Image 1 (cartoon, rainbow, N blue to C red):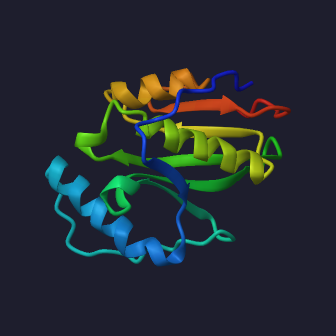
Image 2 (cartoon, rainbow, N blue to C red):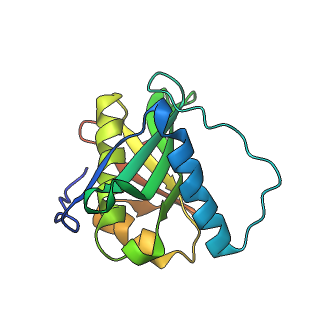
Length: 163
């Protein structure tokens, strides 16, 4: 059960679900992230952003810097066929290095939890590298618990545990 309500992030920064028209802005942020990590991607795949499809992207924007995209989170609506429960699975999250430790990841996480509730899901799960201390801390404050080295989950109100 979610019990955590975080403080607001830096002023001027908000989060929202991405629209199909945000694809180029997300791709631009992904390029920043890839360069930061030293990844080389030979081909790019168009982002299938849709509110009725399986992929949901959440953007964090800095309105004081011409709506610069400062973070994003990618999540899928999933169905556990054995347990018969719906859940949201967060597979990617990134915050620009100069915006870290300013509440942006918390803002993105809150939007993902709200998305899960709007979709009628019982749980939100997060795949995160075991060495990503910042995201582990953000997830723990939001009520997520560890299920393995890379999977954390948070029950939503009224939801059933789906481990």
